[in-house]
Amino acid sequence: MSSAIWLRPALAAQILDHARADAPREACGLLIGRGRAVELVVPARNAADDATRFFRLDERDLVRGVFDAERRGLELIGFYHSHPDGVAMPSPTDIAQSYYPDAIHVIAGLRSAAPLAAWRLRYGEAERITLHVADQPPVAPDAVGGRSVRLAVVIAALLALALTIAASLALLPPAPKIPVP
Ligand SMILES: [Zn+2]
Image (cartoon, protein in one colour):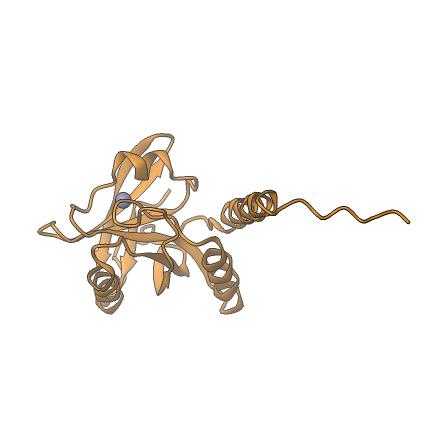
């Protein structure tokens, strides 16, 4: 597996701008690209109930982002989110609620001296990934190249969406009885 992700400075700035604009809410979005080279940073809505402490990527934004990426010949590499009042390290909740073992997570910690860091979160553990912020890709030839997380994401997002719909249907009042003549 690769151990580096490449982000151009303009894209790193885009993540930080989003993080600052949404503070005190946590900002989140998608990292779209090829292998481990990020080509696009796509903001998404934070659907968490308490968005100042947590993030949950809006499932519709997630699915739309994956399909938009494929239309451009790109893939979903991972996600970013911010810690408006914290550092660029995953929280216990981030680790516990990471459902995509192949995804890279870039965290923007606005209280960190180095506000961006990349992580792989899986099996209850956080592994720091080299975040290469530069106009040129990293020199090591194997440093870019990874697995798409598309299938897992699409399945999980569609499931979550189905559950949301099922839950809202369950909240509907019962249908009125039709009188029998
Ligand atoms: Zn977090």
